[in-house]
Image (cartoon, rainbow over all chains, first blue to last red):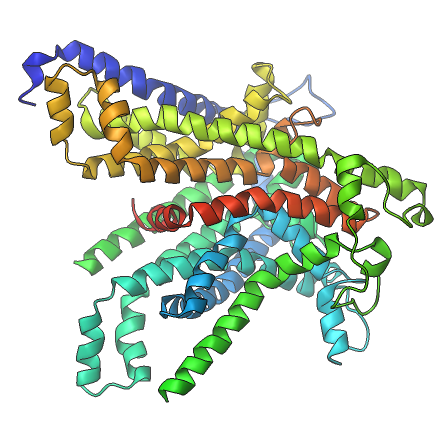
Length: 301
Length: 294
């Protein structure tokens, strides 16, 4: 600030706006218009076969959506999905992080390999897993059959429960890199002295895990829980290539359901109401997320 | 006890390596086998025949041997898989442009947010970051309408715009935090010497911030390359369709040859895998920052 007299202030602020406004305007166009559009459309009846007439219907679309069994079902599926993904991604990530943290050659190899599922497009991982779970030629069926666990091939992706489990499995495979890396970072932040002190007090490895590691990793775990719930809300790609939301809507999570209402059923009014509700749900969750992060800050001192 | 722990670590590590890598190995092996072999029950865990036929089909259009037996229809459907090569080109062009836009627009904006005081700085910064709260599916239709109004449907520009909008908030946030940690002394000295802000950014700050810039470019590239829903909505022909769209729409066809799909899957995975391995340190640090910092 002491340099201010050397540079006329107006030139500096002109430079500031010149660099900031392109980003702000671009983001504004793709944020404010969609919000305004969704709010306006959600209050009207807009259907594909009657584009010339879009009467104002108030909150009817919202009521229709909320009263619909499919909407509740989609949320139920989303929460079921999150409830499955969270413990699996957390437990696996926690375990793998310990492996990544060991100073072995295998660990340095795993540190690179673990990034691969995260790096590839989600649709690609979905295609691979759909092929593995294929009912007629899949490797999963083949393996179980060869091991004598099943007598005949199971159509994993065509039964509601197994379809959900298959998608969940593919999802966890894709998410575990992130949770492992987060846990690894948290593990490495724990000072070695804490372990030494615990051991000096006579704690065994089980007690160290329970009284030192797990409590100190709690903030990371909270982050993963909220983050995975958010991911469940936006999950779409996997469902598109693995199940198409089926069988009978059993894997139609909320984002897929919104997609279906807009691009398959072409009910734009209801689709917009759904979009608003979806965005609202995400905002609530992210607010929660930020609160969790703030707690972590207090935690870290 | 020590020894036992070590053996256990190696055993579990091997298990994890298999869990992570087996799907990659499986799809790569499948891409090298004739279609008939893939339909064997139970699967051939060790391939009996290896062939480059599926790859040759994608690159030259020559049908794999024994392909005619499965009928004309199948041949015609798999023809779509040959769009993979132009789609890879589309994806790469779009993703590079998105990475470039992030460095150029995001980098300069972040530097301004981190160093300059101007009216509205706080609210504008918050606004840019908060824009990421919108879930993709909630903005799909309005995005389509904006792109249509701009006359950009089925053009690279449509994807570049949308991907830039989705990646810029992260870039601005990440780089702003990074620049704030760089001591401003050298920059002040350069300013006294008569450099403009832009010159300072390019000549003094950019070299120091190279790792952070590489990380944001890598993230932007990978977001754009991996994006599926938006690419699905605003593209319609191979003129702009990206590789996830082509591979997904080929693969969900139940009549398609998986050997050929496997080739497109392998080709699609190569660029992001190379990227991830090259930039792994930046990516790891970036991932941690994305999910744990505000």
